[in-house]
Image (cartoon, rainbow, N blue to C red):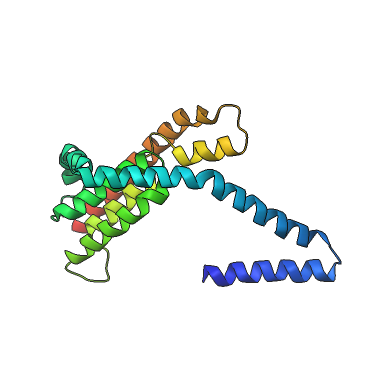
Length: 191
């Protein structure tokens, strides 16, 4: 549905520019393409580096050790999750999100959801564990927002790391709020 909306908005804009005899639309399209290309070149190496580090951490067992470290917290947050593999993928998703690497966290999150769906009794309906994990993932437990720092650096920020403290505050507020709301809604549904 969103693809149709974007297609319509872009088509209407181009048709309007054509009938209003606006020559700038072609320049904007070309400039935007070059800007997107430069952005990919500036952020791409960062994503490749951290994806490689996460693969090495996974292969070396470091993620499993971290998973064991945060397992007591995860078991309290996700009491219905029994799959050890799901907990491992959830923890690697959380680590990647803590580093601000959402694109690296996505594959682990998708695999975690796959394992959570496998143990779900009602296929096609989100389980409590899935919902809580989604809340935790969406709230973005970010300590070091690497992608935002890279974007700020790419666009010439004087101090690209100045976003760290506001990011930690925002992520704490969103995570605590989301998990609290999830807890109360879950308790209400049990009654």
